[in-house]
Length: 269
Image (cartoon, rainbow, N blue to C red; front, side, top):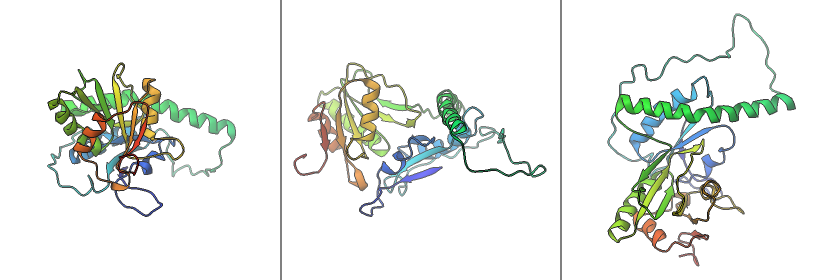
C-alpha cells in the first residue's frame, strides 16, 4: 500500500509528517520510507513481491512525504516487469466449491500463536527483502538497501533521517565536508523490519518528523536502542515545517549529544 504521509490532528493539517504511519509500526506492517519519485515507484514494485512471498504474507506500507514528494515532478524511469512479480499463490484461500463460515473471534491461545506468526514472518522478511532488492538491482540497475548511506565511511558524525529529510541531509553533508567536518548521512529506508546499524564510535544526530508525546522522537528512540549510546535528537519538519540542508548542517554544527532539540520553537532555536 502506498501511503502519503500527512500530519494528524490536532490541529487539522495536510502536510508531511511521519506520525501517521509510525502509529502502525507495531501492528504487523512492513514499512519502507522513500526519498524520491523513482524510489517510490521501485519500492511499490518490490513491495508486491515481498508481501506475497510465502515466508512473509504481511502487508507492506510504502511511505512518501505528503506534498514534498507526492506532488513533485521528478524524472521517472519505468520498467518492463517481465516475471519480476510472480503469480500470487496463497496457501489458504476460500474455496467456493466448499463454502464454510469463519468467525472473527480469536481465543487467547490462538491469538498468541498469531502474534508469533507475525513476528516470525517479520524475521523471515529480512532475507526476502535482501533477495528482492538484489534481484531488482540485477534486472533494472538500481540498488537499494535497508539504509542509504552517504559518505559514512570516514564520518565522525552521522545524520539519520527518513524520507525527503534524508535526501536533504546528503546536501548538508557535502556542505559540512567543505568546512572540514567529517559528516555522513544514513537515510533509514526500512523501519520494519528495523535494520542493524553499524555506528559504533560515531556521534549520531537523529532527525524525527514525528513525536511520541511524553516519550520522545520515535526514530531517535529506535536508533538509541540499537546503538546503545546517546544521540542528539532533533524534532523537525512536523506538519510540513520547512527544513533545508542549511538547517540540517546547523543541527550538526551545534549538536549536543544526549539532548533533545525542537527546531523553530522559542527557547530551542
